[in-house]
Image (cartoon, rainbow, N blue to C red):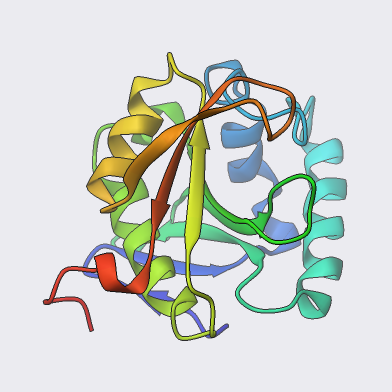
Length: 179
């Protein structure tokens, strides 16, 4: 995927030099407490660099639109979050859109803005739907899913053996002003 740009953000591939800002996301208990068991809290910069190395090595082998990307602010180049599209368990068909932001970047619309750009691109890759899952008490994630135009489709324990709220978006759900 080429870099995606919005008015305020660039969605780009992760780099090993992103270890410190990535740790501010994936090392923050406020963030990782909401993540599924597939991703735990990262303990230090060395461990974060190893995670980024695995992500950057895997990225070229993933079938689009799967992958993981950094969310970078255009104004100062700061990495403020991450986005991902991957298969949900049992890993055979449902694609999950996920987002994580540094706690000091919460409430500024970055997840919705970056997520919108990624959704727009993902639907050029011959897929027909994306899902997001959130723990019922994660009101921020639920709000972001709704701001992304995702519709609530129910609650399930199908994914990760957790009770999760499930949201879905299809190309027909996109607002007319989306390209």
